[in-house]
Length: 363
Image 1: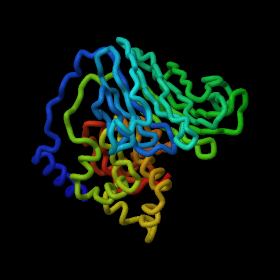
Image 2: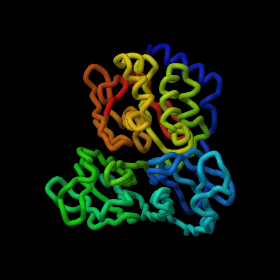
Image 3: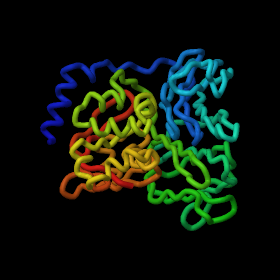
Image 4: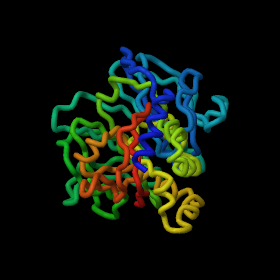
């Protein structure tokens, strides 16, 4: 199996799927990205000055940074596959200053008529060795103001209301964090246990969904990932072009996540082979494919925000996945993650990196 996968990937290289030069980032002075945090809003396209620059961004998706010259731009968000004339947000003129890092988050809900943009500014600066940077955003419309606390109750962030964010620099390391109502220690809205915040890495963590069904949207990156832009196929492009990943492609399409994996990110994807899906007990795959919510949760457990090479994955020992779960890495008997053997590593895409695994990781 492993040799067959290498042959497939070798053929793809020969055909030129991975061809493309590294293009140095232009001398732009502002950075903008978009997050989809409205739980009842379908996938969207994002328009900048009338052109669709992001397509098919689904709920809990966060794009990579878009580099622009500082100035004013017309921004609009419309249902995927429509046009700017169907914009649910905008067109609105927004100004971005030199040196700013701005996340535009679609928040609220269609059903309540509260869908709108939240503008999140982050003070991105070069981190010293041993430091990590975290921005936390409160995106749960029906939840009260919250605190982010350590297991002993010590607040890290206090009284964060819906639509607000807070950023802080911390020593890199492993943290157990809980999101709770402001001034209390329970009930726990979100529980993030043993989360590794890596050295010189920037994290954006958004509490999303509803109070009854809370979730997490996250992205992780380093300044090094901004320095070079690869003109390669997207994660979706590569998966579609790899026969051994056809079942994964079917699942991604069924979960309406193909657009996010084509244009969002950056992501690290652990991609199960067809044989991995076939090894599931009889009826499990069919049942999961018929339940979109369960399917999305499983697929998000195979995706981490940010770009992590195989060396990173092994050295970290665990990764926080896009569904909020933590996947533990083992090197006993060969590298594996959440019990799935890692077969092929470090397949670079335009919006992240892929590692092929021999099992399906179940949350």
